[in-house]
Length: 108
Image (cartoon, rainbow, N blue to C red; front, side, top):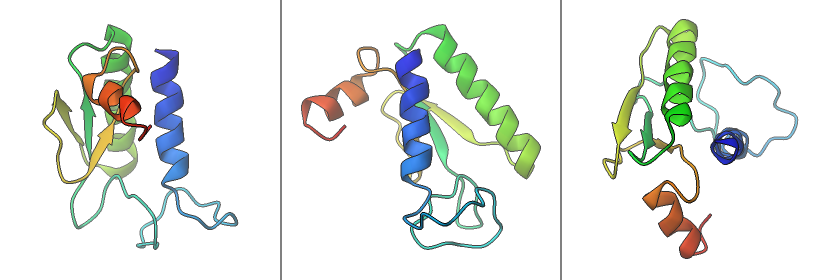
């Protein structure tokens, strides 16, 4: 479970944009290089493997609740290989088949 939290943090920080001076994580304007979780063009989906420990799915539920409280929108969750147009892949290496494939191919 510790690895899934680290991976989620890495994804959020790595996709926040390349501008080191940018400190506003919540915005209503499009920013080049950003990965919006919620936007007019479509919301992200939180994707995870069914083999994940229970704590991962609980953390995903908490994240969905937090995002809903901030934005008023509810993100879709997808289990398995049902990747959507804007996937946020959440998981633990060793439990997630997709993350294991990415790691084996040197992409993680």
